[in-house]
Length: 616
Image (cartoon, rainbow, N blue to C red; front, side, top):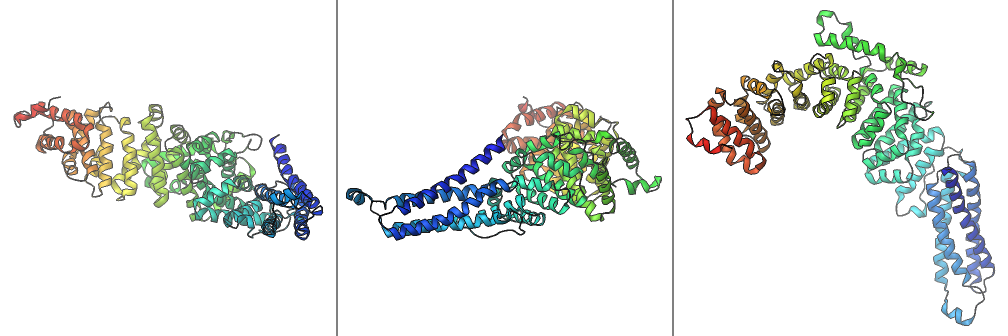
């Protein structure tokens, strides 16, 4: 119903200027003064009328007509015809008094003539863009500057490109989509114009062209260039773009999946609603499957003695997942209308063909696909407990752990960031924490092993920071006897990179804070791993390091105040100084520092009689 109403409106808009043209011509024939000028206006109007009539016919003959420029041009043409009609009517036989009131001059005709010439130029441009003579079958992109866009040439380019994407031949549609992507990369204004002028629906339609991978790549790249802001991402969602994106991701060649996975990532990054929509369309399963493709082949071929214990565990778990996941009919996508039902990533014949294509792709192409899939999982999990849970339910943690172990560079980083977001979600949700990070879970053990390896063995702050944060987020999952995670964190307190040291302090706070049921045991472990001297040095660093070093030191004093290491390091003196200096900038810490000083006074009396003043 909406479609027919839209057609009627465009037909009405086109019929109005034709009616005006007839009135202007009739008025020009009745003119008594300025006859030559009126006749010239009549000729210009006739030319407009001759261009308007075939345009009306094209609105019914051309499929999927692009209406935006038609509406803008026809609206301007109608305004100019109204001005012409008003002027020509003044030239009819009238009384002397009315002639005096309505003075008409040659200047008025020159102005109207210029406006009509501009409308003629606009109509020529419009007919060229819409290709009315060939019913839209001619090849090439029509690019010229109509008078209506003389002050803003970009909009005429955008109109031409969108019209070609929507109505042109396939090769021209691909070229036009690439040009839209290029314009969008230039600046945000071009992106805004493209979206406002209706560029997203034809790009989504082009993305569905499964017969042409080049068309799908061009559409995905253009949509990616547009989708770097929430409002524009929302426009893609409003056009039902998510089901199309998920369909293409699950059933396309690798070279198409690479930009589509990147599109999923950027949409999830800029709009929480996109995260939800992608989750409903079950995008996480194909992402995990693509990420795990050939990840475990080389390791499984290695002699058993050369595989690490957790590698063997990961391989066995992933074998179970592969046998129950990719071969089962449970791997279908959620139907969306009638277009996406019964679609299976590896179940269809086309899916099987794409799998063979993936196997034959160059290694760098496969790696790029995994990089983009890992980034998509990371940004889908960011701030989303539900998506993080879905990733853990698809054995995604095992896959991420394995890639952290075997890969380097951007892929390893993206996998660590995905783990960091999943563990952050687990920290905020006890159900997810208990389900995904049980102490006897192979996935949890594999993840922890790799996080600790990154923290201990890789001298890279970029990788160590997300690994440290991940371990900190899981602080409440470790039993008191699990001290192997405490030692590496304590050692990083002495890291030369202050950001790493501060992150280690923040992570250890989560072990020693009162919210952790085992805070007393963990506090003793931190002290036993010689954490106090490192924290004392942090107090002499910058403001952020001071702040987090002080908070952790207070937790240790409160929960393990009787430990001699605290007295030997003169922690009480340091806290008294902090009470006068740091707390001045962070008044919310005053109570915590006072409690720590009081606790130390209970166990180390005699050395400083004045300490009793700090009792809460």
